[in-house]
Amino acid sequence: MRITVLAGGVGGARFVRGVRELDAEVSVVVNTGDDLWLTGLRVCPDLDSIMYALAGVSDTERGWGRAGETERISAELAEWGLGWPWFTLGDLDLATHIARTSLLREGLRLTEVTERLSARWPLGVRLLPATDDEVETHVVTADGQDLHFEEWWVRTRAAAAARRFVQRGVERAHATPEALAAIADADVVLLAPSNPVVSIGTILGLPGIRSALRDTEAPVVGVSPIIGGAVVRGMADACLATIGVGTDAAAVARHYGARRDGGLLDGWLVDDADAASVAGLRGSGFAADATGLWMTDAAESARIARAALALVSR
Image 1 (spheres, rainbow, N blue to C red):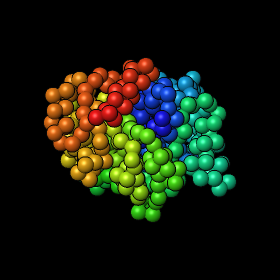
Image 2: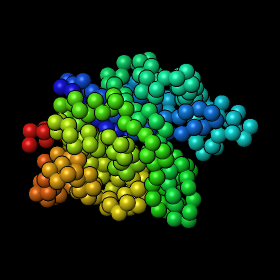
Image 3: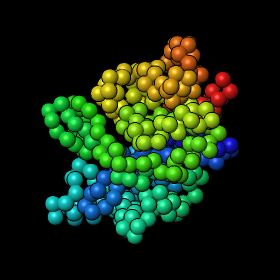
Image 4: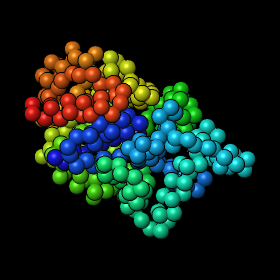
């Protein structure tokens, strides 16, 4: 079986840990909208979060970066007035960004660079940037600021009210041939329980992705990132409010839309806390079911992935 997952950072990493436990060939199309240039280096937070998690080298306490980090380089850069003091990169993590930047400057595409970097560990999946082009998510706030998404997310903790999200450069960008082929050739496509607006939403905003999802013969099944009216992690509720979608599992499914009505999804998996929404979702064209969605470990993530696959038979 060939499974393609669309995913963002930490939530996507936890979900993919489970998917790779299945008897399947797994490709992961990863959000690159959080990417940025910082102190002359190309930083790809979601690609790295998933790579580190699958490699078993991530800092599980902080939820990002490498385990056992030191931060001497960031401290030294700060003495020169460089970098973002609220966005501290560890020394091991900086080595990743140095390697990536060096390979990009040699002329490799981000897809090729990601393949080179991830070959260091037996990840069990193929990581595919959604695009090789630079498409960075910015947040226009209610008071007129234009912030890179990472600044809005990390420095302000989404406290600055967002008026809209802008994918800078998306009009000139293309989804990679590898990402489109992974969707077209899949037996099942899964949408990870990642942020629907700035992770999955950014992937969907790339020219070619939505049409690939609508055209693929594979069932497309999503896993809700909302449990009992609350976000599982982060501040996706602030993002959803900006685009007028409620913090509700069924509302997110309807935001993606049922494929029979021109949307993207054939199936939608919700948590047991939202089981009351299943009947309505089925009536709206989704194969839907409820199960526990807390990804406490790889075994639970694998169980959730199997539950998502079980919707395919419906």
